[in-house]
Amino acid sequence: MKLALVGLGKMGANMARRLVNGGHDVVGYNRSRGVTDELAAELHSFSPAYTLEEVVDQLAPPRIIWTMVPSGEATENTLLKLGGVASPGDILVDGGNSNYKDTIRRAGMLEERRIHFVDAGVSGGIWGLKEGYSLMIGGDKEIIDYLTPIFASLAPAADRGWGRVGPHGSGHYVKMVHNGIEYGMMEALAEGFELMRARQDFTLDLANIAEIWRYGSVVRSWLLDLTAAALAENPELRGIQGWVADSGEGRWTAMDAIEQGVPAPVITLSLFKRFESRQEESYSAKLLAAMRNQFGGHEIRKED
Image 1 (spheres, one colour):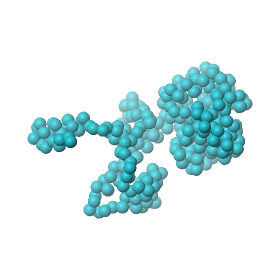
Image 2 (cartoon, one colour):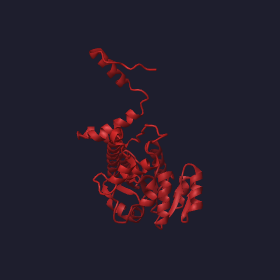
Image 3 (spheres, one colour):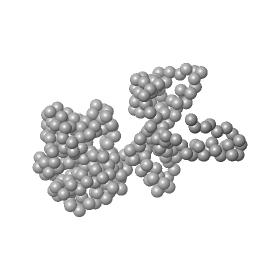
């Protein structure tokens, strides 16, 4: 098939490579020109575009345009512009980590212009080029069926790792929950390895333990594989700050759990642990120390 990719960051560029390797023709557009030129020089069946109008001009109806831009304002503006230059019957796919509520609204807006819309939750990170991407897809079944060759090329295999999960918004909703679960799994692994590191009398080799767990263990996973790789490279994690960002999906998952009255303590706590990692000093910890001093005369450690 022929399609356009709008947004050629780490994920978008590798998706372009995988699509071309899968036999598709790709029109590529990125806000900064450099990466577009690099891919044009690297890939056959890749055509550069330098405006969204050029993207549309290089495709024959029904056009397929897949966006991979940051969620929020960037996605909103891109889809508004594309909605203005696309034609009825064209298909827009949002592969970013958009909030599912925004996705439902955008689908309605585009449908008023008779433009089809698909939301695709994409997981795989920098390994997607080699391993394939997990795709959680929301939208009309007829349109998703039409796009099957694209999804089959991006996925780990034509018959696994991807699928329609429901109507508009459901793809991004499932990806949101996926990322919330990811937070919890990462936190559990991190806490477990910290606990073993504290058991100094055993002088445990954490990199070796991670390797042992990778095979046959019930906690074996891709996240454990990545943990093992990190520990093999840098067992003491020298030069790495304990500062952990969050990209938004964990917050949305926690808020959805609150809205629905569904208990999700592990996901929520793992999100709060990321907040805690970014505190240079904890006012609440200081206050706890002050309270202990007040009621029991316990020692307070003075700041330098």
